[in-house]
Image (cartoon, rainbow, N blue to C red; front, top):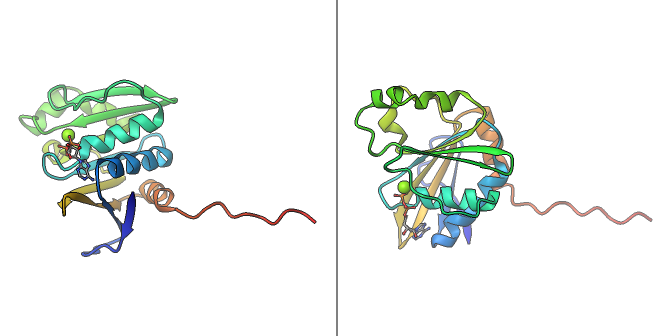
Length: 175
Ligand SMILES: Nc1ncnc2c1ncn2[C@@H]1O[C@H](COP(=O)(O)OP(=O)(O)O)[C@@H](O)[C@H]1O
Ligand SMILES: [Mg+2]
């Protein structure tokens, strides 16, 4: 279950959610999958084991990816093509220096129309493109709290779709 909650330190247009268990993180991923647009760059922040890869797994499963979703810890990137979407999952935890990001030619992925999900993005600064959405994970009471921030217009559209929980309005039958 995902519970959207009031953000404690609201420093802008942020949305927070309490994710009580792994299933909730996967469910948030499924919602995100439905809110994606080509070219979106999403940063996933938070400590080791906070749920970043789990969220990526939730997105990919919801898009229809049937295989495993490996953490790109050692490969830096895991590319996917699913449901007509190109999605690149990055993990820069082991990036020795930001220059390695350029040396490996990874900047090319950020200029195309693929969706980029980035764990440990700050390891690649200052070479990384501006994110559209930043999702930060924190452990809380055995579960997680995520703060979701839109940083661009495309990001705002995505976050709005994500949080739009309203049921489609039922129009009265004619007559
Ligand atoms: N909302 C949640 N509440 C409790 N445990 C969670 C939640 N989401 C994910 N987990 C668990 O936390 C761990 C997170 O691992 P992972 O997603 O690989 O973290 P990261 O990629 O941030 O290092 C996994 O064992 C996963 O089952
Ligand atoms: Mg991870």
